[in-house]
Length: 262
Image (cartoon, rainbow, N blue to C red; front, side, top):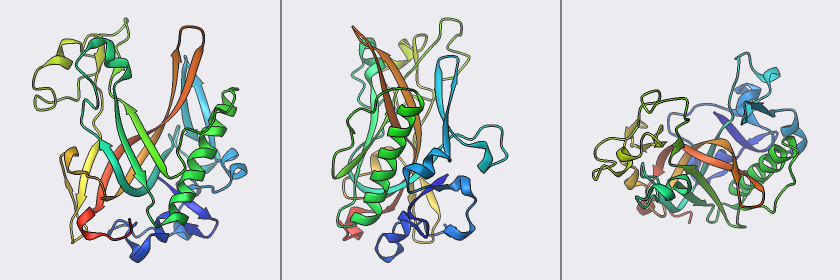
């Protein structure tokens, strides 16, 4: 997972007060990180760090191979922030209607509170990445969707099942408790839930305990691993492309009751 930088000498997570933006057992220092784990702070640097692989209609944001020796390495960013709003449930905001399935999302909105420098660095980095990805796709840069004071992470709940495959090709990640009424099960041949956002709570000794997504509450300080997804949608008259920063793993560093940075 790649760390956001403020400049060539500082990681954004280290500028939170009292080291609270850092996982207790995270001993990584900027000087020791390989280049694929360090997100450049400038647009120019990003141009040499990531690229978009377009394959069979799918666009994937990858780290440039000169920075690593793996076949393909997808960009995963580490971000920190104070929760403003969270809906990380397996079915997100889905209303149970099959027609709403393609629009259903899980969302996580984070703020910087009084910690403007590390949070601002994250906002700039995401804006640069969005602009660069659209440029690499030969698309115009739309007006930034990130509001001035927050970062919105968003992930689509369902994946469309291709006509050439069956629902058994990719098993559902849902449990009975996720879908007690069985509504998602009824449409699994059309729309499948193939992921879970992993949620954990950091204990005093630094260990991380798995937790229900509902424990993430407004005011909590969290560490998030986020991937980048390029979504291409047909509208009535044109085609729309959206760059999503998708929460993959969320760890509560401190609960709202124990922090004062907001």
